Amino acid sequence: MAEFLELESQDGVRMPWNVLPGTKQEAANCVVPIASFYTPLKSFPNMPVLPYSPLRCRTCRSVLNPFSIVDFVSKIWICPFCLHRNHFPPHYHSISDENLPAELFPQYTTIEYESPSEKSTVPPVFMFVVDTCMIEEEIGFLKSALSQAVGLVPENSLVGLITFGTYVHVHELGYGQIPKVYVFKGSKEVTKDQLLEQMNFFMKKPRPSTGVIAGVRDGLSQESIERFLLPAFRLRVCLEFGLRGASERSLASISRSKGNKVHWHGIECGCTSIGSMCSWFWG
Ligand SMILES: [Zn+2]
Image (cartoon, rainbow, N blue to C red; front, side, top):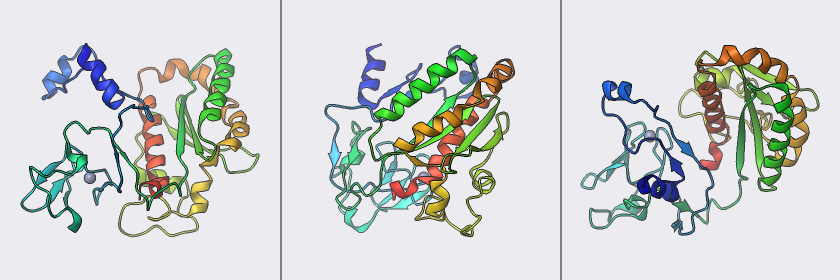
């Protein structure tokens, strides 16, 4: 058990298993499903801070980390997420088995970067992905818990809201006092491209023909992003609108949504949205 607690205190990740099944059969034999809880922004007293920018995968923008496979001779690292082979930039030329950059130290699975060039020009972004599949009485508690949570995020934060019951609702918060929502069926998988098209991200600015769509630096207009991400103080007003009617939907949807993939798609929508809109943050 100590091993699980140690992992959580090191990376903020809690899993029911400390190894992943190697085959489909092993996965099928798992009585307790594989899952993970991640605590974002968990404070670590001895967090290593590197005074430069992270090295990113050219394809998926993941960051070089101790799980990447490195070819020291060719000066190439393989992204463990998309398997793209990335060349190290010239200032990594002296890298070797004995001379590793800190981000490849095996024990540095969670680190912070504090680059002087990227410093604090962009506010933190929080996307609230909320399960509204509950009885009406609980909606009031949900609203107050959310207001409290919004009150705790840093003043300059940008905040977005996605709710899900039988359907996934992506709230267009920057649409004045009139609530506007994009609705996706909870049981249907939506790709990032479909999501961007259906949420009208390319109404005023044509879609780039190549490359990753990610934030204002890569394909999206600031205006289209601001429809979904509001300064935190404005979200409190919008929460009222965002959650209005949630209970009616949820009452009917409790039995229907049990066992379907709506939870996953709600979270997936959140990840895709934040990945598409906020990548200016990641450079
Ligand atoms: Zn990658």
